[in-house]
View (cartoon, rainbow, N blue to C red):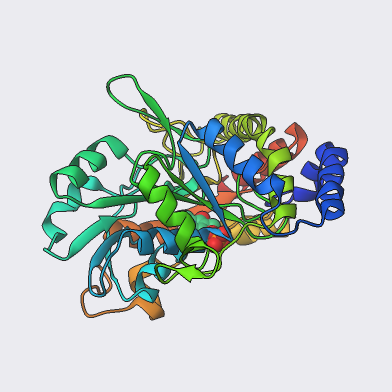
Length: 375
Ligand SMILES: *Cc1c(COP(=O)(O)O)cnc(C)c1O
């Protein structure tokens, strides 16, 4: 059996090698390394895939979040609500811009922002909410959008883990992750569901004026070269990365399908293990399984991790410390116990290998190993 990887990018490359190599060589031969034709073409193709009006490529997912915050015209001291249980990038850019991250609790089943708990934290300075579609499943956007509208808050979706996931509204309409709020921000970090071969990111919006603003901020605040209207940043997706992403975008639905198949295998094989809680499938969102994340209910998460490692099976804990307890983000507002669900999840979650190349033999070995730990 082939060695099991958390993410198997080498194996994935083997299936698309010729197309990828040709795309990279074409980009190199054109020597249009910055803003070459592949960048525009990719933005257009991704906009079509997502059924969103504008895609603005940028250098990485963290930049995408920062550019989004800048475009909304938030002032120092304004508050932005973020889940306590997420990757640090979401809160980092808020703090960097002199804004105040307001941490909030997540739902124990979906791991996503708990809309019910938002009302009591609002102040006149609260300006935006950043739902994170964690592990590949959309946050509950319908009530969140209604809440944001009622209280005049912007929504920036962090869809770095959920590109391609689809949220179903009660009127039967479906929309792709990242296209429901004012702005969506995503990452093409290599291990993401749509990953390039370096760093990359993008912003999504359906608003023409916002698209122009985002584009301008990502490019030194200029619309016309050397005329700077606003303070911007330098954040570009380079042509070689865009060329890679064009090839991989054509595979994205098949990649999602492979992940869902692996998840279904895990679900079935692990259903009988009492000490585990399987990933919850939200009725209002598809799940693209960026991560397949179990909750270990008997306090033996770290022991399981070690046991699996001993059998050559990698696993990861996303995330071992919620943001409000991270040294960099500690404040008098939130001590230990402030967000019990997030704190408990950080003790219980473990993600099993999840990628597009998992074989039945590997899945069988992983699941029988998990079972044997608990028997
Ligand atoms: C990966 C990730 C990011 C940041 O993306 P980078 O491209 O690494 O900057 C932001 N938010 C979430 C939830 C992520 O998983």
